[in-house]
Length: 487
Length: 96
Image (cartoon, rainbow over all chains, first blue to last red):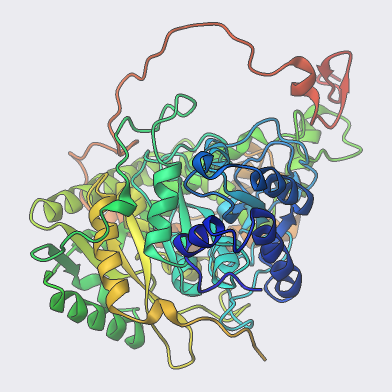
């Protein structure tokens, strides 16, 4: 039976009343995966045995000993390392990486909070893509219409939540990979402030841009998961030393008087009419709730995608240099020298998109090009950050669409430049490290979900959640649920 | 503007430790050209006095006590290795 339509709070009550046990809840999740995943293909690895074992241990935990996510079934994006459980990052190079040595910090924290990890979900290889079509395993389908992509790279994470296979999942977001699939699948996805959540155990793509965050059905569930996984970590020197508030307890605070900037570029050329309309409707609703909004201009935003692809590819080319067939991962057979072994292992193990990014990044860092491409990208990044600083000196939030259009059909986007340009609305938050959430804000005529993006100041997740919650409670978009189908 | 040649793509592949076929060289030459053309819009912006951003959150000098401790054992370190011998990672010849 699908877990869609429940909240963590509902389940908490049922568990408390003993209407359901940890094992029964895990069984529900596993059974629904069995029934639905042949269609959705969200999972790479279902850890049935491990999940049942975790749940059985939780069955005996006294009520007073229960932690905040007690018995809640969840799924982990497969670029987040899990001790003793296969971690592939969607790559053939790691297809037999069955016995990682440690848990990522987020996995450990979710374990401490007593959630039950059901398995590992699909992604574009190493997080490089926006559809899951670049996964070397399979393409995940959009639960709202199986002919469409779920978005990416955290497409498995979003589809697993949208189809009610698990209550929440974690994704990673380098240029939009949590928010875009959340918009495409009609769920809530949060990319927190850079450094708020430890990345120890996340397979690096681009370290100055990578983030981990939760994907859930509702804003409240999302806040509950983030408050568990956030916080400084001695194992990640880029994690920030800040106090983490209980976001879920501040959701209902008044939002009247908050000032919102709406960049006209985010509603301009390339943004579909349906998206524009749904965002303007959302702004009207927020106005009724007492928020003041104004259109502003962000002239540098049109350069964000180009800057991002230079920086992220350059960082990726160095991050992925570690995969050499020596310590772990696949090794090419029949190489005669170590040099040949490196080259063949990498060429056989990496997919086309990953090689394209490594080549692009190597180009952007090579002698003669580094100033014009990599460093130029970093300078433009500074300009974009300054633009946000000016806005946030006058406004509390920036609001716009999460994506220029609803989900694409599987196979629709083939040209890399077109694919890259579609990330234009999510990339600025990665470049500036700002907390950004996508919440459902309507549907296209065809019934595909659309997402509203709310961007806040550094470490002001609380205001982002408050506004997202007020909007969600005032609308019905999140109550509509996918009916699986397609041609 | 930078023109991407096949020779350049082959050189980049070598630097990145990737073996590429002739077809791949042709494909990547064309695609890198269009991406670089796309990226070339950055040159429109004057950034002469702008400091490049390497990191967005300014944490400075994260320090800790230098206390030695065991992280993983040799056995664990070798557990996922494709080839190993006598407690070492084993690779094909480094020198001919």
